[in-house]
Length: 362
Image (cartoon, rainbow, N blue to C red; front, side):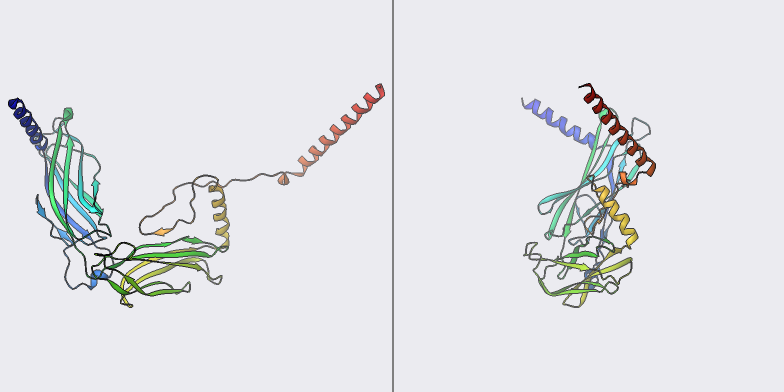
């Protein structure tokens, strides 16, 4: 019995070693994409936004903060010698898993499948966003490379890394901004501006200001004295603030495309973040076309008008719109009316003659 167990264990280990042989991860590097928030320019120290030459089971020496975009670049190589079907790998791909970084859940990213000939390698980029509500700490990163050879042979290799997430003392950002609707016309000149800000830093903030501004449209609204708790201690509600501003554009404003600036200030006056919204103000001629489009698409399940502008998702309308022509009797030519009238008179005459003939027989 023991001999059978040892044989089975040996077979499993042999299969794993064979599956790894022929496929290797030969290069790993990581880059950090900081957004344009001014908060990163106020910190005195330089930030390490790139880590090259990463080895298996190593720690990534880069500065990663909440809300950053992280890109892993992985080179995988088919180490089988020769070319042709015997050494070609099909359905090859790279997968990355960051464990527990999304409020205890994993974040995963997969590359597309591709073919890899014997002796060739492929460079793959895998990108993922660091959540805004991530906790500071070190997270395990697993990078898998897989491929399938002839006759269903499975090739697999795996590398491990350590990713550290840090927090700045002062880090407030605009995490969402929206203009809805973003296209208005001469009939209805009302829209709504909204923005969400969040404290991503370790310090509590007690003098934040959020501003909506457009000199051309006459918009100048600012909320001052906003309190945001530390991201280390508070839930989303206590470290987040939402500003909503209904706007009605003056009839004196001419049609055109107008920018609306969303400004976020630390200590009431230090600019920390800025985003731009765009309002498309149409004239009456284009408004008629737009209203026709809305009416006709509302007969279906799709609509292409008034798509909001927002950072978290871009909603692009891809549906086609057909303008329907309604044909009514009032639009019929006069000749048709004459023919219809003559037909009615003819029917009445036949009915009268038929009635008299029956009366005479009685």
